[in-house]
Length: 455
Ligand SMILES: *Cc1c(COP(=O)(O)O)cnc(C)c1O
Image (tube, rainbow, N blue to C red):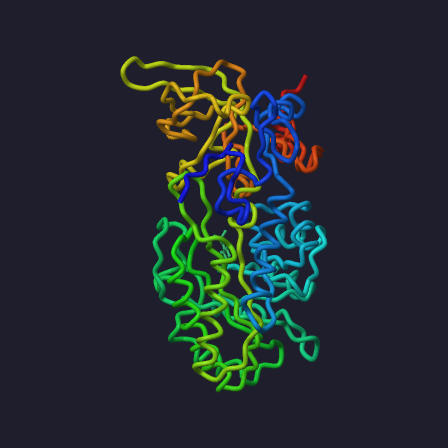
């Protein structure tokens, strides 16, 4: 398989998650990089740095690939739900909804972002291993599907849903006991996970729910982890879930939905080799069909919840290179004007990225550098031992595949304001998130009167 450099003209446009850069990446006559028809160095000039960029076509292409593959490979009804924790904003909610996707949310903030962005409440699924009472009230009032994660959810909801009123629509999340190869922190399918019911508890939950007036069990959910490149774990998952579906249906629940979670990986660096979105969907669809046929079960509504593979490669971040520190014979540090506050993945998961100088993407790399952030933390390094052409202060560095788990995990560490975000397409750019100002960070600070010097 060919190695795809972020700036290569002929990327594998068939599946965005197999590209490091957005699918609209192109070079102008001076071999400078543009995305969505916009020259990146001009965007840095216009909006400042650090800057999050979202490529509309890449995002829409990922959504369509999930939708189309589900229709093609799954004979029953299906809907992909975007896992909004990957990157939650009005614009992304709006775009995924316009592509016919639902959304999964885990907080009131993500829920209002989905609703205000235009996602229909019947296409919203509410998750969480410790939902607050107000989250559950909001979820019930908006008639979204609530995923029961534990007995505490059940006990709280029983109090919340008024008797004789509309039943809550419920799914049951369980830990399927499936291991996958990914980072320890993003595994969720193993038995000692904090999420979901133990498989041994399912039968008693099904029995408990037989005569419940306030809620209806409409389906089952499991999610096994994130940034997964193998398909076998999801094949196994389909079988485990079909078996649980059979148990539930035998005990009188209609259970017409099966939600296999998300987890498909993306290409951050050239050696990453995830299956394409459609290959992944084909495998899980076939596995669900097979597992249901073997048990003579009517096909359920098939749901999946991709996050990273929807927005990851649609995003990139621009930084300006500032200081240079050369430690002879050891290392050269180039520092940029952002870092772990806008991208905490390297320091959290030791994640790797690809990058280039946006105005010199094709120039041969002639030095090995470490790209450091500006935070007061030695571990604040975005790229380690990375090959780059000789650069100067003020050059713009583009870091690819930052669409997922960057903005959504960003912080104000060192009281650094969050970057602006823009959307690009057809040669146009528009602001989708204002740049925070230092004053914004004082918004919630209070200095009680007695601390204010009397004059
Ligand atoms: C995080 C998460 C997802 C999305 O995972 P990705 O790896 O981003 O596709 C889906 N479902 C649940 C319940 C999650 O927690």
